[in-house]
Every structure is written in structure tokens, then in C-alpha cells.
Picture (cartoon, rainbow, N blue to C red):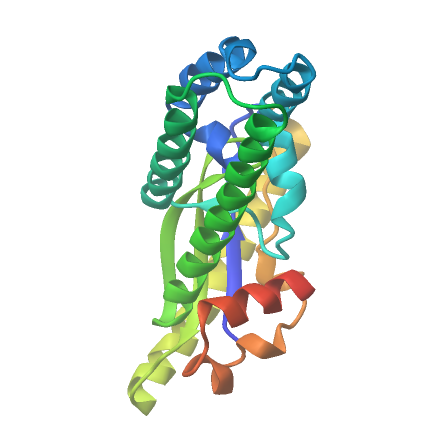
Length: 232
């Protein structure tokens, strides 16, 4: 299978949910929360809708159900955010709704957002794995909104020379990581920055996803990949 390597940034920040990492999230959701009492004829809809908006980020992380780290590229995060804000703004443009309608629409938008984030993360991984050898791309960690990057080992090599070069590149990558890891452990034994650590590359601990092994990549669809990753 294509090996998934993950190095996560070490700066500390306490935030949860991919959309929470977007620059306009605080402004947008502050507006949504403060105007929720104007959107329903039934007073019972107000606390329900308010709770949905308040817990949006944490609930997103709970619903992703991915066996790979929740790390998304800035480009795809912008695409997801644009789609969500557009749906939400349209919902808020209407006048008061009948009882039950507004919270139900919020749930629909939430579920659509989760699906968009899942697809965005999986698409980037599949694109990465279709290269030959080590390939890296910049991401944002949905767990804490820090900069991170994902590296993978792709099997899309067209010649024995490319394959030999790819394998050598993988070995060099692993050797360099071990050297840096040993150096960091030695350094931290004498002095340690609070809240920092070096993450173990995911390929050392990830389970084997047989449905993502090379024989299946040629005809692999996004839906099949999503189902595979969710099952593990």
C-alpha cells in the first residue's frame, strides 16, 4: 500500500474542527449565534439552534470518523468554508421560519460540511499517493489549527529506474527522520520546551488498508476510498 507519513507542527493552540481554522470562522459564527433568535417563530428552536452553532467545531471532529489524521490543505479549507458560509448566509437571509425548520436546516448544512471535509482530506491523500516516491504537501491540522505537512510514498512509477530512485528516497527519508528524532530526544533530555513534542510518522503505526494497495488504485473512486478509510 502507499505509505502514509505524517509530521505535525508543534506550536500550541487549542481549537477543534477544521472549519474553526478558517480565518473568517469566528466572525461568521459570532454573527450566526447572535442572530439565531430572529429565525424561528417557535421559542424552542432558539436554544436548540444555539447549541448546534456553539458545538459546531467539536461535533465536526466527532463526526469525521477518519482513520488518518484530520489535516486539510488551505486551498481545500477555503473551498469548504466558502460553501458552508454561502449556505448559512442564504439561510439567514430569510425571515422567520416555521417551528423546526431552522434547526433542521442547520443540521443539514452541518452534515454537508462534514462530508465536504472528509472528501477534501481523502482527495489530497489519494492525489499524494499517485506520485512516484516521496511527495509532500502543506496542510493545517484540524485538531489544533497549526501548520503541518503530510508526506506519502506513491507507487505510480513507470520504470525500474524510477522505482529504484523512489525506494532509495523512502529509505533516506526514514533515516533522516530517525536522526532528527534522536537529536531531538538528546536535546530534550537537557532542556524541554513546554507543550512540544515530535510526532511519530504515521506509517510506523498506521494499520494496513488493503483497499488502498497498488492493485486497487487504478480503478479507485473517492466513494470507495472514503468507505475504506471509515471502516478502519
